Length: 178
Image (cartoon, rainbow, N blue to C red):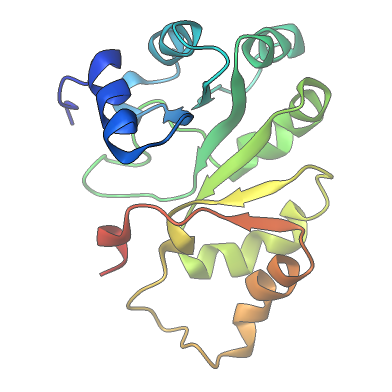
């Protein structure tokens, strides 16, 4: 997809309108794995902005440390395979790539932001919890129509570590859940 124009000034105006002093830029999949745009935006207000970017497998630890020094707080990982994208969205890394990058991310102080369907989290959670870094579940774990209902014990794979403070849940893009 082609994202709409989103100049820094528009973001600042939105934050000012809402009365917010800080914000975070999330690298859209349309940018691939090049974080130049969001790191440039963070550089314009480094005390008030952070970024979540994308890095591919084999990204050197030194590069991730540089990203963190420039205001990147985390990396996105998408474990959704879609006919719309003929696989993963362009530039998206999956959970297998996270497993490879986790030691370098830990060293750089970056957290993974994870996007997948609830069923996928149930399957992957035991492995993800071994990484030793804070995990952020994106888009409310894509909760919505599913074969997993609210009283399903498999949800404990997400809810238990969330209650224990081992996961963070990002409450964003509600429209994806309806």
